[in-house]
Image 1: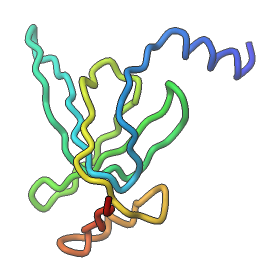
Image 2 (image 1 turned 90 degrees about the horizontal axis):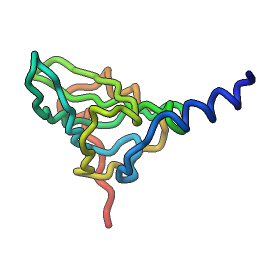
Image 3 (image 1 turned 135 degrees about the vertical axis):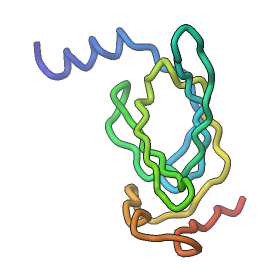
Length: 117
């Protein structure tokens, strides 16, 4: 079984929901389903997309937000059944695909220019 055959098998097994188009630099809200005991609830995670990695069903994206003075990053698989919805709040203007330089910036320096429509 070659690499292409494995990828086709994985793509057939996992169904991907349709999400809006977003890229690094955009501010998004991910509505994520969390199971606690027997209960389910939806938690919102709002932050800036700092990277998208992979392709197809194995694609992931990393979202960074500031919680107080601490940076919190979370990696979401795009094909996760726990992602209920993704909302794009702002479109950002960045010149690279992976904006890890944001980790070293705080306050006003960590702002990203908003795309004019």
